[in-house]
Length: 277
Length: 302
Image (cartoon, rainbow over all chains, first blue to last red; front, side, top):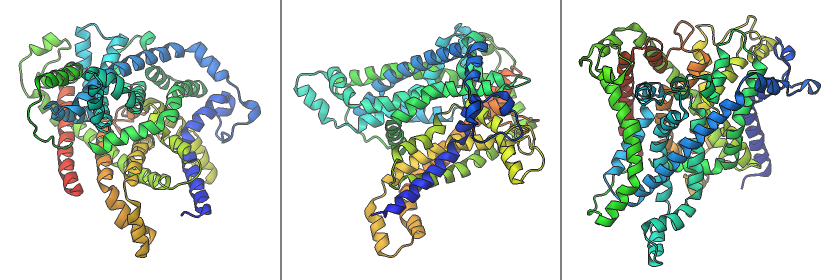
């Protein structure tokens, strides 16, 4: 057994490591809570003086920029692309897991290929295709672009989960009078809930982070996603750091909440997919 | 990928079900992966600057785009930058990920929550990573320079992202920060697969912690570690967001990787043909690395 003091030594080390790793996020939060007069100093205080803390930057950035609209646009794209990808990938993953067809090799190759395709390359044909189809400057176009990234890896991830569920489950369901689709719906899917959760959150985080499609396929500021909106601050002559950091913190919050709550699912899901393949 | 054993053909009913369930994914992949790829190959083989699909496909075929891409010095400069960027990210990210995995494999109070927090950078969008680091590494007001000045390391203000000598380092740091959690996750899972009995046997034989790592831990996780290196190398090689949002490839092209050059060709100069040719060469490079890596990986894990 590990001696007791060892465990606390490991805890101390882990706390130190986490503190260092999270410093950039901490600094974003601190900057967003302080007025420019303190932030724009050659010796900024590492701990915020409590009497100076205010949420003015948040109020101001919401007032001056359409941050809410950007976040709503992002939410629509994330929800649309994640749901489509998850449904398509669940069906395909189940088929790949249960039936031996030539599609298994194709699916593996597609996944590998999609891992090698640079986003800044695949956006070129999307731009040309979407222009022809009048899909540029629409959120529907962005949803489709995100589905193109989501389906290959989500399919592989779901196949990995279904592989861990024994085939006897369906056989038992069939004896009880289910057909194949009923067995999938009533028996397999409820058991695959952790897998669906992991896959869904993975899809959501990837789509929320996506930048190159959003920047290229949408040009009207009203249709910007949050990543594009935030990046637009950087080119300005005078960057207003507290405002930018406030917008950044707000845009991080939804994914952080999801991530911290569902991280155990995600880790087991990612690793079962990554290690097996 | 494991080889699928040969089986007798599926019964007709199962075949309908198998392909029916696959159909939506096939449609998605055909329309959103295969068709765009076909357009890319077409574009790369058609010199001329048409932006419309029908006009583009009526251009004559030829290799002029590839000739142009291979002849221009900026391609080779960008290739060099991509190699430095990828290598410079992988080594520290791997070391940090392995260290974190070894630590979090131990038991201590609060491990579950601390692990979530440690992996958090993975969930931060690349653009926001860039913005955060741009601010921390700002020349006059950045916290990094402030601390370095206070400690006495710096006497002048270093403009990390703006100075051509430091810009590459400045874009590598946020990339390491975002990519090390992937290493930590995969190696943590691999560590859990190493049987505890091996460690007990090693301890009975009087192995030191370092010897235990060399002879028990590392052989147990080597396969997963190498796979993680390969996947992360692919990810970093095509990474775009962090560099684009922080330096945009500058100053004076010092951080212009292949992904950035490609994007500039396509949407800065609107030369889609050369951009596509560059992309084809990029994917071909990645493919060679994957095939070599895959063979080597199979020999390693055999």
